[in-house]
Length: 181
Figure 1 (tube, helix red, strand yellow):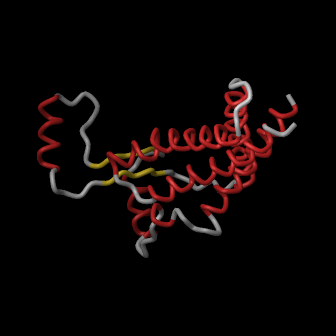
Figure 2: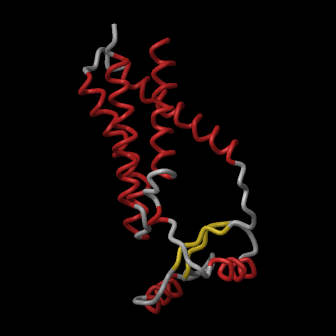
Figure 3: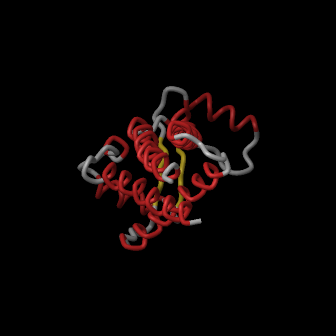
């Protein structure tokens, strides 16, 4: 139990630390959050167009549209601009709550990984490291990359780097910790 708890806490801190460095000091995700000097006027315009917070895809068809209407929209949209917008009516800059939630999620995710690793019996350092890297790659392919296939958002390379490095760090730690006598 001690190995599981300490492994999860330290592994969670390591993955969280990498995420913090990636998004702040190293600024690897800048490509996915590009700046425009027109941001104030764009936000003012969007606030007059969207009734509530939500994710919007433009162009799209209304709920209940017929297959014919959907096909027509697809055809007339070819070669034209499109946008995927996450719009929020108010900024909530509660960094403390977000940091604590992020850290807790990382600890829980590593705790699940430790549980799987401990069910393997006595995995070697390399088995633990490779297993952690596979989990990172599975997570990357499941969401950021699967979304990128359709929407080509910025920052996909940073997402891949995050998956490999945070789970690599975690794998090195767990490979050492779980094999310690």
